[in-house]
Image 1 (tube, rainbow, N blue to C red):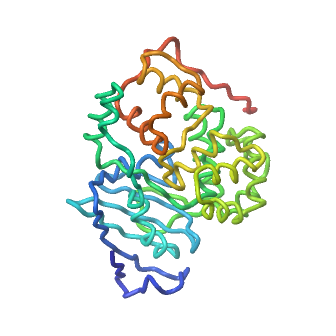
Image 2 (spheres, rainbow, N blue to C red):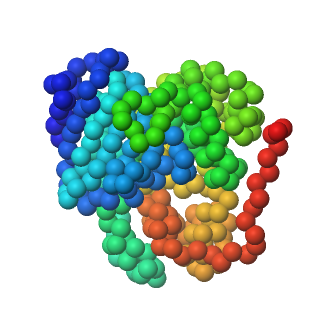
Length: 328
């Protein structure tokens, strides 16, 4: 993968906030790739200010270690054409293969084992979605924040809170984006959000306190998670933070590190969905872990297949109507 710039900007040069010309690259994966299914899982709702799909282009605004960057990704036959703007453009293009699942290692996962276990539908889904990889952003803190906001609330509430906070406290993304886009705040920016703003966005105090406390440790969290050698070690680092439990840790590892074995224990729906797909009946978290045990090392990969299979338990009642305790 080579990087070029309209003004011969070198990707090896230090990031420069004055950079105006975009950088370009073409990524040629060594594996089948469905760009939108792979990277699109990071979109937090239809009005996510950090990501959007516009026709055949996937746009992403992000805050890299070198500064903010905007990515525009287009997939052609066997290639991903990428353009990046902003001081973090070089970092974003260098990281692109991992974003597209280039580090996703399915060694030890045998699709035939799904059929042997009595789940031929999942084996068929695996074959049909072979281009769906596990993405990783390498941005631990941002993944931790988004997952924490999603604790114990509906997706509608969480995505709305994310949109409000990023738009108000993030930084306008560079480049010719189809609509205004924003990169997340810095760690200090998250720490400095006042309590009334969290409340107005619809984030409850336990979640906002957890994010602020995590921000007090800043870069050390990300460094410790990235340095950990196993999913269990990363889980121990993350769950050592106040307000961060098993669910948030798993969601953070899935988004930031593409962890193929992470299981979001404590999810309101997941155990029921896994149980229904694999046995035709609901199970609790312990039952879900027991059912997924044959695929240890790739349990999240199996969960993704279940979610893509379309097998859903029949609804037993009306949708949950979320309560809003904010003063109007």
